[in-house]
Image 1 (cartoon, one colour):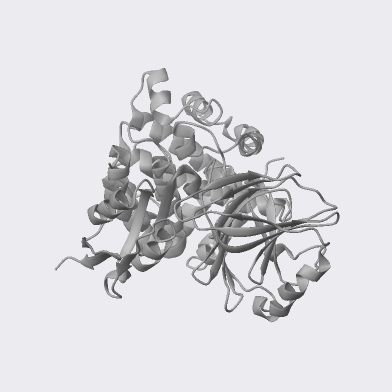
Image 2: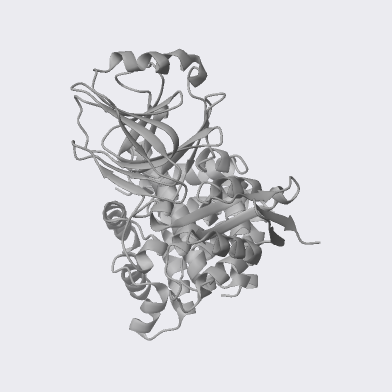
Length: 174
Length: 329
């Protein structure tokens, strides 16, 4: 009666609670996130399967958390206006809960500013960053598209993020 | 980069490496453990990770980031208090119980129109469409009265559970009375369960204001308003409401014939399940303390009991009057 994904969930639950307790420093919030993931999985049919349940569950739970992180900032900006974080769609989207269009638009506007900052980066780093953040390819897809290894993609993204952090620290440019 | 290699870098570089890793689609169990250990090791790790992750997801505008990073590192150990949403407990201002007399008086305010009474027996559900287009879906063992007048719409939930899809009318608010708790719709799909000394309100869309009997607040305080995904459990004796966030899908669980329990005691689960079945399930106090996280399909009592035995270290014995669950020796 238990689906493969639900079995994987039950197996990985402790692992996820530990991570989110470490991430949020709040065992209650961690439990909430992991329970929310459970309800999303429980709502799927029994034959719903994914290739790599462990990575999938982490990503899905992390998206629940990141949406909360985003919602928090958005709520502040909107002076408390409430935002519907409950989304209804089908298939993997329901579980993975990718950010909604509005969040993505705001993020992209933010990224447009960011791209100015990464223009000084080597071309390869810039391309990889752009493919990942603007064209929304995941790291594996970027690697495949450019015919490089995943760890190469990871290194370039780290370099881009590092320059972003340095830029941020220096404050906005002229 | 290996997890060991990450550890040899500067703090911010470590945080960057971890954020990029965590946002790939292939975190292994070992990665999750290694990242957890790293975050647990030092509050400064978490602060750095938090600052970098917020930039990575575009949550921190770049212009603000320098401040945030400095603040995060300076306040390492405190930042999570201010940044993580914490579990919230609301006290309803004033006691719901204080309004006890109000509900008794309330019928006098209504027009003489006779109330419509809708009931379901144990195990039954029933859908009702009201004249204004509002839809009611009654769950098992429920009794409610519908009292509509030209000026207001009131539904009194005597017992059980009802899901409402309300056609909003600002001039004619719809109130659900459950004991002294009054739930006022603001254009809404929501569920009200009155069971075991508590009123549980779950909102799927729109908003519901939690009032107390006799209260006529035109604009309820923000902390009294429930929005989509909010659930409040109001203790009928004390009037205290405990709020939480829940995942509400396209329907409430019971409308799909399911009962979903997250971290509930077996005693709670059994009490809830007994709403659906004629023959009660019983547990002793000790067995009732078992923790249950389960999705049960409410097809038959026999299969529910069988599934409980799959999930939990319990065995069932059936007598004429009850099904008794005992912890396995």
